[in-house]
Length: 274
Image 1 (tube, one colour):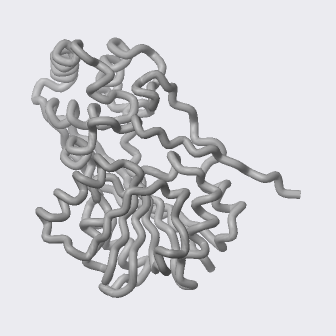
Image 2 (image 1 turned 30 degrees about the vertical axis):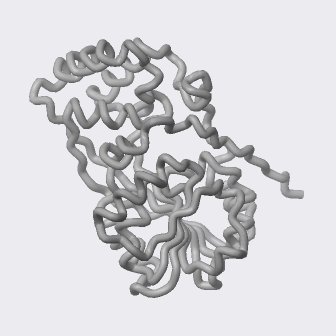
């Protein structure tokens, strides 16, 4: 007998409080090669419908919209959706409908989709329930693409990233914060996505990798940190200027040029209905 798996919904409305504008500006953009790979895998041709869950400020929905007739983008944060609409307007993206809703609340009223994308957000969802609902919303030849970038500074061996995290720990404590306005503590994703998927109705899964390079400055990496669930700017309060000065001094001690380059691998975890 297969043991029933259950992951609890982790979404907390304070997870990215105040971070929407910075998220759009400083979070790593998915490279064009990633969207080309998605186009190849799913034979995208400008037709059909895309559902982007946990869409944030539109980092997937906006660039991928050209491969679909219609895009539905859903996020539980009104702040993220307002930023997404600003970004879409600046790009002339007019085939996207933005909906404020938790992924767990989707239903058949949304219609049928050819592809569902979830970028850096599946771990915040009640995964079994979301998979169950998506199975009913996908066309027979459709699938899900879970998209992530492996740039987590907490597990990096890059000296400059280790230095950045040491400064975060100095100001916020050793434990990795998440949610509850900084009072929550990050817990590992358990069980892993692939186990949850294997126990769902979906037929098969495979991971594709798209490598690319990213260069940061002190300013842009600070902007990135302020968009993370572990180091939102509001956590620092009146100490923010001192934290920023400490971060700059520490990073420049590691790399005096002020340019920090890393090799990133974007992962596309593809889940097919059949």
